Length: 552
Image (tube, rainbow, N blue to C red; front, side, top):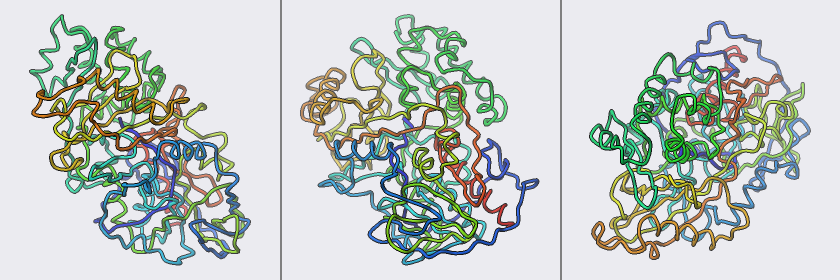
């Protein structure tokens, strides 16, 4: 559900009130605490010679200090591009535009070729690094490869529907998000706190007992097939346990897999398979539940302390708000950086594979891309990235337009409790935020764990459509007004996302240094938990390390 996807890029900016980042932790290390700069190791600013810079035809070009060769682009990004080409996951597709944004002065970087700090990648981590640098009065230039900032937080507009590039739910409980974002401006619309689980040809509600006590009591019936009374009590126990102590201490606790955590807590096989498997697979894209139990406990706390929401203007509104607070001329989009990064004693620069020029960083460079891309640019990351040794996890999201109301009206998540088929979870975003669909229409969002191989685009759509018919009925006219049958739902777009998150199986290492030495820094969800909160914190801490090392 909290899905992140898309290659790191280089973006635009917009004016928004800057909010002060929380303090805490050791600069240059992802520490799960508020940052306190007292006691940080500070070094004198290093004088570095500048090299020239030029960005031409959307590519960053340059010298030997940063050898950025297109042929060395990481395999993960190549796979991503192949999947996008196959499934039409590109903003330039016919009938597709990006979500409208207010005009921004930050993206008017013009021909700016040097700054104290260069940030490579305008996703969530890069934007939060930029935000912190701006608050600290540090001159920077953010380079984003795509046509706008946001990374995985992008929204397309297709026929008036808002399509997030991969289904993503915003959890309001995240401490870092609370500190850095203006929730009121995001116009967050909440989901129902619970889920409808599809099992044996019917939906069965599992509700949050504190927010929906009547529905929760109804689920205690012995006839309810999704967990026993003991299971429902155990959910409350686990929830209360997650509230004990500092929320970031959870991420340092001894770990096992989510599956073992559930077994140790005493949950039945029925509860694990029918509810937790699809629910956690929608968050971590790991149906075997091998993800670290630390992340399970952290998410349980976030669910207990906040709500699941969609921003009214799409998930891209989060990136747009961060971009809006950046200084004029600090962001450049369409500037792709690929290959190997080498930092020399005579300066730090961004280099392309042709042309005599570079973008010059007078003091530091922050690489804020996905793990594989960062490792390709920074060879010193080879032993520490991504978060765990193993393949990243992916997801596929399909959107359908409904010319009428949805088959069911609740603003809720629907889970596959049977375990068969392709669909893991689905919802109707327009029931959560009506802005996701034009008036009189509805939007269906369907999520699959992984990217199916050996299945053509049309075959995938028809397979999913067949499963939707089994879930919601081949003809549902009259169920809620005039909902058309599933066969008349129009496929709008498919987003195939091979790299939705780095591997987060055990053993996990969720506190990775952001300071690499020689003026090079790195941030992103491969240095921290792969959540909104982790990406935001990683970017902030990397920027704080830069500021400390500059002696500011």
